[in-house]
Amino acid sequence: MNFTINQLDFQKNDGLIPVIIQDNTTNKVLMLGYMNADALEKTIIEKKVTFFSRSKQRLWTKGESSGNFLNLVSIAKDCDKDTLLVKVNPVGPVCHTGADTCFEETNRTDNFLLHLESVIQDRRDNPSSKSYTTSLFKKGINKVAQKVGEEAIELVIEAKDNDKDLFMGEAADLMYHYLVLLAAKNYTLAEVIEVLKNRHK
Image (cartoon, rainbow, N blue to C red; front, side):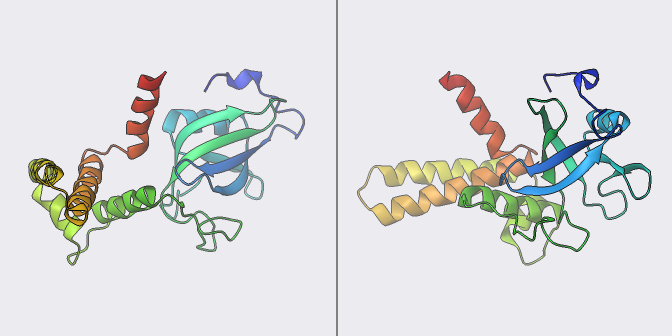
């Protein structure tokens, strides 16, 4: 956040500013809410989005009753300093109706790798006895890391031949297990991409 709370114009709307909530991964707009200075400060400190509820006339942390929190990623102000764009990693559906967004849109990315990453993270957070991914997490970080190493070796071996199907199959296996390792370490593909971007400068 490259500004201070005091720089924002809360006076235009009786002490409130509109806040656009956007998914950091899918870029979908999830909802619109309002913050006063206290709600913004609480959001920054706790890293979970807090609004000022106009109906309840109090601070309201999204997910405080449902558990569907909006985990803070970044905050940006608009050119007039009276509106915020808040990027988040949502936990569960955002709308009180149970929908992904308050605009009746499915919150899904067209990028399959990011979709796969979210599925893997869900298997980590909501284990299923029928899931191979869940079974990997249960075996611990050493086993997950070992699988990445095994798949990398198998890919190197296939790279020496000219069988595209086998090579692509091993490449896919390595990518999948790499995403599992990232999730096991509580890191994301977006963080890796950010490192690559910084190196590219």
